[in-house]
Amino acid sequence: MLRDKTERILAQFDRLPDDCVIPIPAAAAVLNVSERTVRCRMPGLPKVQLSIKREGCRVGDIRALVRGAAA
Image (cartoon, rainbow, N blue to C red; front, top):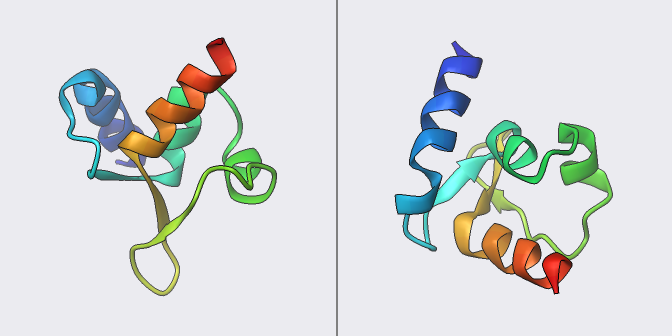
């Protein structure tokens, strides 16, 4: 089920607004890194608390990180 959700997010990623928050597994897939890397080793990528046990990342922050890494 989680994979299906991640795949749907990836398919729509270019159309998502910058303020949209996606779960960590989807952010990791977009960035092509592990979920642990997103959670622990990316201090420049702010996390948004979705619930007590779940975090996500803003699409705009992910896009900025990708643009900065590509430059």
